Image (cartoon, rainbow, N blue to C red):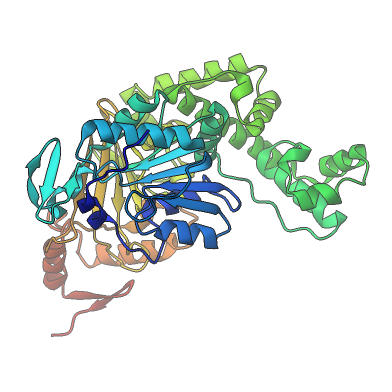
Length: 478
């Protein structure tokens, strides 16, 4: 039982929100909170998340020792523990709060906490295992790895890092594996259908993208209803005769590789029996592998290759997307799924171990060692040479993380030749390529050691007598 005699000063940490908190938005984006779900915000503060979730159709309630002390605590499908562990100064009470939240969770507990990279935003003196602020409030900041380990220790369950400082812990193994599968294999989008013929067209499109026929339970209800009347043998014949064989073959290959990627990620995070897998993953394995054992063996080989520097470097050099430098491989998030499967595994393992940040533009994979960084260039599409706002790095060997912010820097790193980070068929790649060629012809890349920062780039623009107008290179006026 959680003590409800929390220090009155803790109420000062409750923030009045007119929008969802970051952890709640993450959970919605990850489909861990859906309309109709029962959600308990344990330590809800002023109740901003509760009101917003209620407006979205959730059965949301909140309990807080100061603002909502009389709420009856019932088990809920989802329990949010949002920035509560940071403000409890007593380690034993902190642990009891986490234990109680876990007891109340029916399917998933979502724990969030402030991380040590926010230390510069907190002023105070050392107190217990944290800081006592000038307002009389307490802040216990966590390392990303430490937070996940702490949640796992208290719950006794393997947790997943959804994002830096946001941890999901599932009561049911199927729910955990379903979430992992969702992160690796994006949901298939079905074409809109209003009659039987359009439903068959949607079915053909699915088969071309997935490489196999879906089961009834994999279809949207509206399409399943439209396809309930024609004979199944007739539907299969129509699909067989109408689907483009090259697209079906490509879809089958894509699904096979995605399945291997999922099983490799699952092993990295703990593999369960075949029956615990999401139903779609089971169907993919039955369709494209001789057995679950064979699929696991191939996935294990893929995970083993992740240790081989030479193999990783070869995959980087052979990739149809991304930029290779002497030390690392860079790829835009729009091209991430078009990397070789072993590189996708590399990035996915890091994201599940330490959490992929919510805002990022380019992923950086080191050749040697296993370090992944997510770099945030918020103006990548609008700025011809976008500036780096922040980076978040995880070392897969130690699971140590590092965060750097360039928000207050006067001389930020910037990017050149943006097309190199994208797939050649990206709609913007040709425009970026034209600009890069003009900049090369103007001599702007003659001194590569200077152009990696704002000041050096400005110096080279001045030296060459050039200026940028959007993605156009023009002669500079005196």
